[in-house]
Length: 469
Image (cartoon, rainbow, N blue to C red):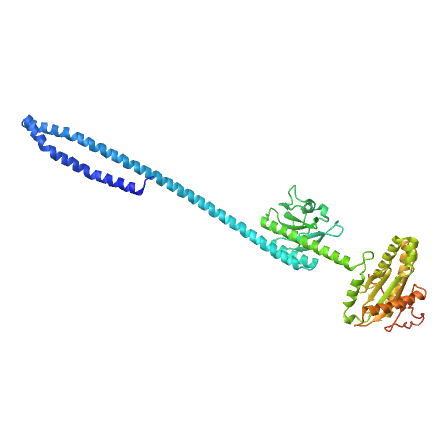
């Protein structure tokens, strides 16, 4: 490697040699000129003396000139070598600089790509965090569906999208959420999870063109013509039960980030819906009787206490299946369970949706009738007795009857006191022969029967009460 000091020294030596060479030549010429003239005159005379002097001068000067030329060439070669080395080093430096520029450009490009990847990851993480927060705040499936529709508008603002979920039988898909730029959803024609490629394979499916050989058959022959589609399976509790379906123009490519966002939406939404369903099922199991599906005693008490004051008076009834122990002992507990379920079904079919029914224990039931008088409640329960007799005949069960005790309560009364009055009326119905409705007033006394009926028993009047489905 030629240093700056070496190059400066070489330049200085070349300059000195170019300066000294003429001086040496002139000095040597001056020194030998006179002796050469004298030697020529000593040897010859006239013009021959001059020729001899010139010959002697040339003989002496030629070696000196040769030496000076050789030294000059050697110095020039050394300088040229330095120049070549310097040029080589400069070329190498330029090549290194070019290589460094290329590496720097590649490094900057890679840094830009990494920055884009990080930005995309940050965007996905932010979307996932906000989506998780929104779903966590959703208290029921309708609110979850609303979050999903808003997410569609964020992830695919220009594309129609929909969420299809299976029903409880897992045999049919239903559209639960749908958005579209023009208000029109994609309207996927798949009607069952087993017929959806994405749901069946539990994998994201991308169809670039509905006319392609391997496109989903349900994409063909749609009113909008050729199109592309993206299908993301939705799993709940480890089972694929739905799909997110979005469409676009034929050949349109969905960015990987958008696909990842939809996959995140499917994962988090499926998990939230699954959790809500488990919580609802757990709450239902905790608040209902497993055999009949009616409210249990604790839930019945909570529901009665939650009845608002403007729905009073509230009629309260206690019911008991007559001779139920004999039915169990004679026909077995399975028949007894069937009898309880049959009575429950008749009770539900006969009462209003606002009425509150519960299995209070064994074969005993408690029923609350908001915004209803005790007389109207008694008439409704007579309807239950009549319909129960017909249902027993159709169901092929042994004949059994039900006795009812009814009373009326006002706001502020203790539920235990109200139920005691209704239970006293029920015991009177048992004493009087069962299979009847007995009414007690707010003081616990038998109420006067309407004209034409026996005391404490309300006869069934056709048209007095219409059951609500």
